[in-house]
Image (cartoon, rainbow, N blue to C red; front, side, top):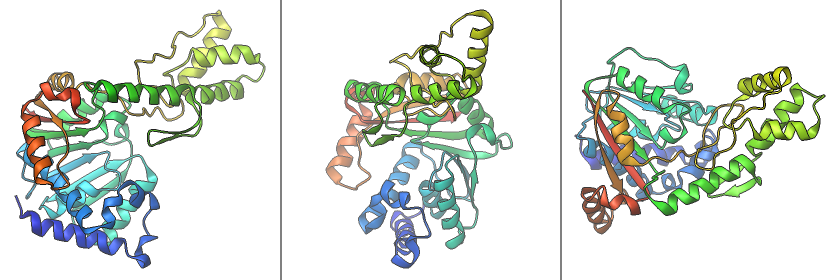
Length: 335
């Protein structure tokens, strides 16, 4: 693996230049809000160490390899992997704001071999066995269909290729899981506003109500409300089909909101912060042709030696330590 200090210096120089006043406006302001550490030298080193730690845990050296980031966002991980020697670093993401910023970074700093595509998971495909590593960093919680992602990951990775999952939605942590379920409740039923670092602009129940009202303006308001309540987890086409079926047969839809299930945006189908028990997720991944291991994660990318030592110990104590971990890692090798 390439020298950490040399790579971190190159990463730091890139983002130091990008953050200069004359350049900063070229990139979406969300980049600096989402990754405030990029404003400081120590923070930029932390971002590099974060990727190094993932690769070391997976025993993966990106030198000369072809890597894919499924849900790459602003592309920070791919930029680090590029400087670590990846032959080709490919990413896709459905967020236009984030992807455009990543594409500007690629062009402005002439990052050869780095590619970014504006697309959702279901819109992309690659040749079988064409990647050595697939990264999903804080993204698996948002895929509309996790099994579809795993099916594609198994197809895209070569035999012996590595799937690296890093996520903060650890269902084995009771306190974290309870907070996430409160978040689900807010996104589904409201009220609108800020909660846990998220902004609820319009609850999903209200969105479904408006979808039904717009398509069936003659329905009484109380009927619309009942139908909106009974079409939770459905997207707009399925909502309209369910209402049509009700009008033809009198059969009410039965898709009621379940507090134990992550709600669905009725327009995009996007989900907000799924919960995963890491051990169960690793076992599930193995059904798709992988050998998988789950690890508790407690931090350490900041470089504090004590934190790193404690994290290393608690990772070895997985699954006992999962109950207290805010994050987890799953490393899966394609068989």
